[in-house]
Image 1 (cartoon, rainbow, N blue to C red):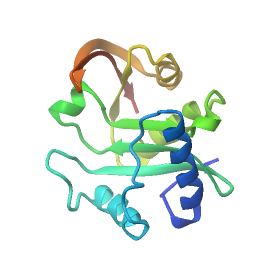
Image 2: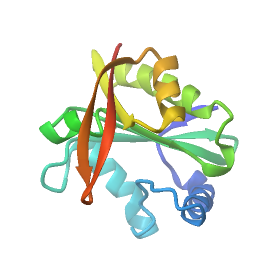
Image 3: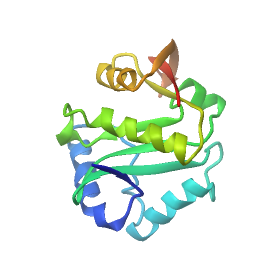
Length: 169
C-alpha cells in the first residue's frame, strides 16, 4: 500500500469508491463534480495555496492505493484557522466503503503523519471526529492521538459532540 499524489491512473477506481459512498449515504470530500481535466489542477492548487476559496488553507490531498485500486483519501491542512481548531483539524481521512474494518484507516493515518512531519514539516497535528465515531477515534488513538477535549459544534443546525485529539510528530 502506498500513499500517493492523486493521478489519472487511479481515477476510475476513485469514481467507483465515490459511488460506493453515495450508495451508502457516506459523506466525503470528493471532487466528482469537477471536470476530470480540472480535478488534478484543483488538487495542485490546494497544495500550493492558489485560487483557494475564502477561509480555506493550503492542503495536500493524498490517496491510499494498492496496485491500481483507490483505497482511501487523506487531506493534510498545512495550518489551522479558528474554524479548523473547532472541527476538521489538520488531517481528515476516509476509507473506501467496501474496505471498511480492514485496518486501512490506521495504516493511512500512520503514513499521513509521516508525510505531515517529513514533507509539510508540521510538529504536531490536530485531528477531530464525531464523538460517536468509535472507529475513527480508535484509528486516531492507535496513532498516538491524545484526547484534548470534547466540544459541541453546530453543523447544519444540528449540535454534534466533537472529539479533538493532538498528535506530536
